[in-house]
Length: 195
Image (cartoon, rainbow, N blue to C red; front, top):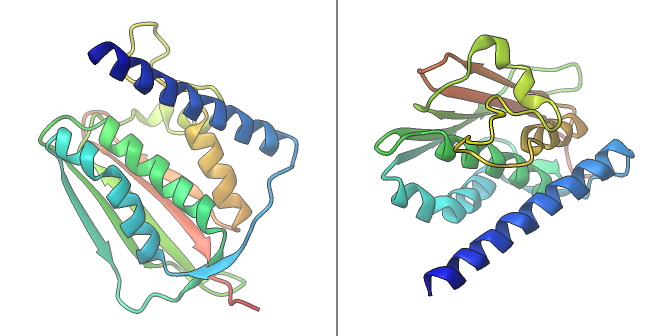
């Protein structure tokens, strides 16, 4: 049973990696498009939290969510926003030691030339990132720990794809972090009205 479970888990991991590589290839070829619909950010946050509930419980982490009341609905690509939020929360869980905290905060962003934006923060009390690596984590195929014995495996494409998805929504994605003191990833989404 354990062997079969390991094979299934490994297969899922490979499928996720292939999916990331294909998404990256479409982005590199400028083949990414947005399928916009109207939705609320709290609905996406609830969905992403539910998908990660078992991981949070397994690592004995505290997950908190704060959504500012009366945020305007988004007219955006829900799947891509879910992907970004899921990637950031997954990383926060992955890089936070057992007993730590992770959180999501959604609020009204600063006014932009085209109107308003939403600001989403995903933070953790994890291992943190040294300032000299802040931009490296957004590069394709980059890993802060590139050694063969590293604990956290992946393609190194997750944050590069997330940044691309955010930029397609006229937003930006950045990190504030100190090594050993956790990380806070932020992204903005331009608020558009549905036609």
